[in-house]
Amino acid sequence: MEAKNGYLGAPNQTIDAENGITYAYRRIGPQGGRPLVLLVHFRGNLDNWDPQLIDALAEQRDVITFDNVGVGATTGSTPSTIEQMAEDAIRFVEALGLDEIDLLGFSIGSFVAQEIALARAALVRKLVLASTAPQGAPGMHGWAPDIIGALGKPTTSPEEYVYGFFTDSAASKAAGHGVLGRIYQGRTEDRDAPTSWRTRNAQYDAVLKWGTPNFGLLQRLAAVEQPTFVANGDDDRMILPWYSHLTASLIPDAFVKLYPDSAHGFLFQHAQEFAADVHKFLDA
Image (tube, rainbow, N blue to C red; front, side, top):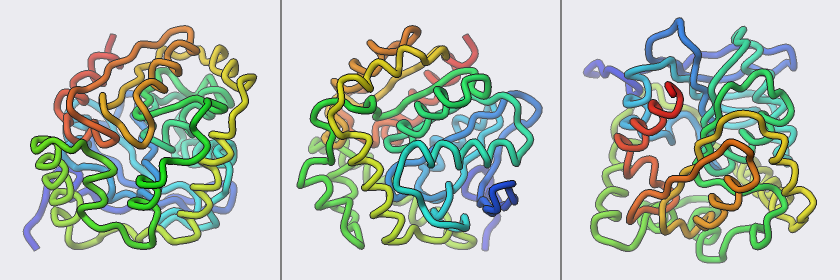
């Protein structure tokens, strides 16, 4: 096989944590600075990050992707609460010996990132929340039937992935098929283990619990001390863009950017622009 640089060629690594879990992860970019740790979307594993985005982020910083407990090649059973997922992610960061990180969470990963920032505030310097919503927000108790029907089945077709992550415009659909090519055809060997049906169910249980309406829980985000960049596509059917504004309004030091003609997968469709915005935010 022809050698690949960047994320497509990044080796799969493992590390044992004190909770008895062996975590699978990849790490690329210049080390020595503050790492940027990434938390992936619903049912995602190491291979579900667009390598174009990861490479753009890794041009300037140490980027770490990982499988949380029970996901992909990481051992254990996937928990059914966001709180436990956050605790498990903290154990992984501790196992790497990291005292301070920047944190980027995408979709369900953004829920976990919020919880980490609240549970271990000293660990997180800055926070990036992509396609996010606060716990207890109205209308978040599960995703729309067409979305969970497309992305929640045992097998998701390319057309269903594009429908769930991109808009109906020709440009966005074309971007979606480009992402699919990079994710599923760019790395043909040494791929991560697929996520299981048990992981799917546990994660969706966690999403339902997170999204159970409770206005009192919204106030938790007032305790987030970190500067926060909230981002989404302007036509996300999975987590509606207005939740980004709600989230930012609840965090004392936060701002929002919506990317045009894009949906849940905006950070892949606008990979270069989003990466540049992340670098600017983290360097500010």
